[in-house]
Length: 189
Image 1 (cartoon, one colour):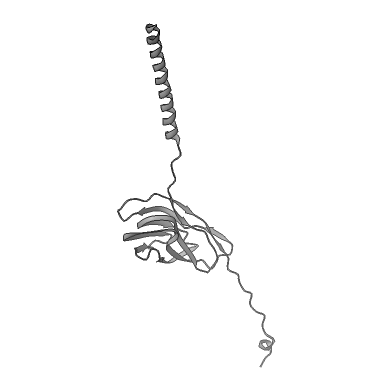
Image 2 (cartoon, rainbow, N blue to C red; image 1 turned 90 degrees about the horizontal axis):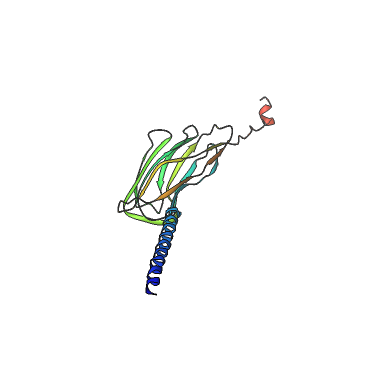
């Protein structure tokens, strides 16, 4: 009887080893194809609508950040529709210094930095102001595109993020008709 048991034990051991191997492969495949967590931060330029000739205020927003101490942005826009006027820090980013290179129409390079990071949810880090072309005769849809971006902590570590840009609609300005001449202006004096 002892010999029969010895013959069965290797078979049980082999089945157990195979089961562990199969479970290991399934677990490995599951981990390999498990969706990665999306970055928690989104850099957003929300859309707006304005009349031609009116200024266009463009906030650059973050949905959530814990320790933002550095920002580098390369933005493009259509200089035939928009003219860059200014960039202003917000209350939340007042501790950061900022520099804007606007030498080339249609291109903005923005750098912000500070010794201590800021944190918050759903806030603008910068407000851009553009003039809109007052001579538009039909509605125009345009964007300020994020071509390159980098966000960093005060320990010089990159912050993972996604970007989103929504379009702007610029409607032609409403031309007021010239008022009819008054009867008194038609009477000779």
